[in-house]
Length: 456
Image: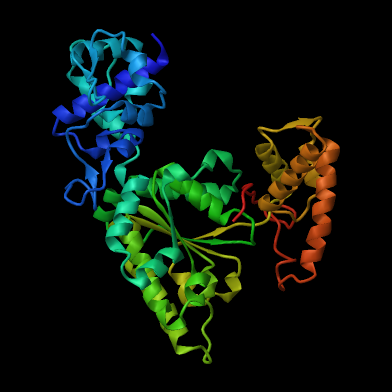
C-alpha cells in the first residue's frame, strides 16, 4: 500500500483516538495535526482565546492540510475500514481496531514514537509489534505552547488591538515559533566556549525542578558579547529551535527610539510578554542602547528605563518563570558594572580564525556545486571576515555565476567575490566606528576560540 494511504490512516486514527480518549490533551497531538484542528472561538477552554475542541472532525480538506496528500479519500478508499460521507465530505474509520493493525504492520517504531495519541492507542492494543509509550512520544513532541497558533492567541489575549499602545508594542517585539526558525545548532560552527554554555543551558532547562529544590534560581541569564556578524542572534534562534521554545526578540534601540518617556513601560511590557509566553527565550539585542554606563548628564527618562531594565532582569528567572534571558551587545565597553552583574554567564563571540573560516565555508557550501573548491585558500584570504561576511561572499559568487548562465561555481568565482567584498568593505571602513576595525579575531589574535557561520 502506498505511503499516502499510511499518512491518511495515521491521521484518521489519531483523530478518532483523541476524540474518544478524554484523558489525552493537546500535547498528545503532533504539531502538524494541532494546527489544522485549532479553533479560534473564545469559548473553547483548552487554550488562550482558542484551543482544540472535541470531536475532531476530519474532512478531505482537513486531511489534505494535515498530511499533504492531495487526494486523501482516493488514497484510502480501497481499504475495508474507511468510509466517506458524500454530503459533508467527512472521512471516518468504520473499524478502528482493524485500521490500527493495518497501520502497525506498515509503521516503523520511530514514526509512532513521535505521535503520542497513536502511541497511546498502541499501548492499549493487543500484542503490538513493538513497545512504545505515550510518555516517550510526548517527550519527543514539541509542546503546544511553541505552536504559532498558540503564540498568536496569547498575544491577542494580552494585546487586544484596541489600544494604540498595544499596536506599537507588537511592532517592537518579534515573536518566532520554533517551526519558523530554519537554522539549527547542527548548521552552526561554534567555539568551545559557546558549545559549553549551550550545553549547560540545555542541562539546566532539563533539570529545572531539581535546581529549584536546591535553591539555585539565579541561572539562565546570558550575555553574548562580540562584533556584528559573529552569530549572537543566530545561535540564540537556533537554540530556540533546538529546545522547541518560542523566541521573543526585542531590539532595545527601537524601544528607546520611540517616545523616550514610554521607554521604562515598554521594557516592563517586554518582560511581561516573555513571562506570558513561557517557557521561552527572551533575546534582548543591542543591550548597550539602554544599559550603558550612566552619567550625571543623562536624561531622567533614560535613567528610569535603565533602572527598570535592571530590575526586570532581577525579577525574571529561568527556574521560576521558565524564561531564558539572552542579552547581546556589540559594545561591551558601554555597559556599566550594574548591568554586567545581572548575567551569570558572559559568552564571547570573536571573529573566526583561519581554521574556523574554512569550516564555516564548508558548512555554507554544503549544497553548492563548486569545481575544485579549496576552502583553506579562501579562508587564508579572508582574515577579519565574520560568518555573515563569508555568507555574503558566497552569495555574490553564486549570483555572478547565475548571471553567466552557470550553476556550478569555480574557485575563481569565489576568489573574485572575495576581492569584490574587500573593495566594498574598504569603503565601509572609511566610516567605521572606532574600535570595530580592531575587533579581536579568534585564533588569529591569540585566542583559541572558534565561530559560527551565520549573521547576527
